[in-house]
Image 1 (cartoon, rainbow, N blue to C red):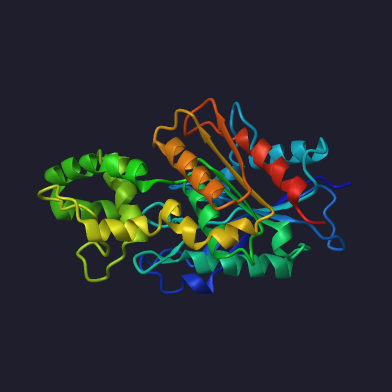
Image 2 (cartoon, rainbow, N blue to C red; image 1 turned 90 degrees about the vertical axis):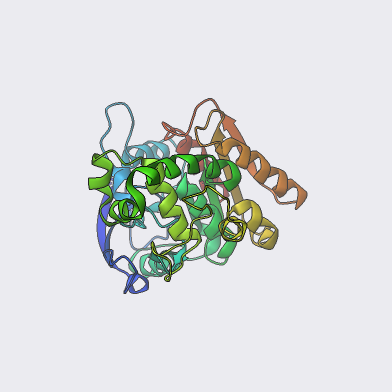
Length: 331
């Protein structure tokens, strides 16, 4: 039987045409095909979403101490922990680092691009083209994207797993704004514009990653084509005064605030898997706890785990989510 394959597809996205940052419309998307893949068979599909500052190709990286995604999937399938499954690793990156897998005037229509990718994969590969055989999984911003896509598109994704997802923006983002203010004091508006124009060069000159992350989140959650940066920040950069109206726009994208409006969608999932490290450096544990509390209040079935660890070095957690998803897939 032939071994597994990684096919790197060049995917042209109509949804990303004319995106605000002129980021590439054609993306390289790795597709894992299990050993013995045959076009005459039908396979479930996992869409594996990368974290902020990353894209699908990173899952292929060789690592001294950890398996890459092909090695992990090969082991899980060979051991019987997973059924043979196609795994697609999208590229929803932007010049700023990430898109949060949503549509934004300041970034592009990345939510639409994800749905477009599903249609392309179903046409090209031998997929079980049904929600019950299609999962979305991710870590950090990818976990956020997995939750968001599952809430908004249960007719596309019937299973979801969110590892250390961006949740509870009050604790995940708000404590970091002081660092953005301090950076602004040094560089002014022109410095922020320079950071957005060439993030790598600015980071190499000492710009804090936290500042770039917050600006990218603002572009996702509060786009404004009339603002100097193309989006609105929820804080006045001069006085540090909080701007409640803009912050409410951000909170409208927080899964904690989205859940009541999408409870039926989450209730319809065959599996909703959530986990988080107990010492997550971005305080995401508390968002996960609040989110699962809301799930209970809305009588939504889910699987939740807390584990010893922080935000990083979590790849071993895919063993748990992948096997749970595989067991829940429809035939």
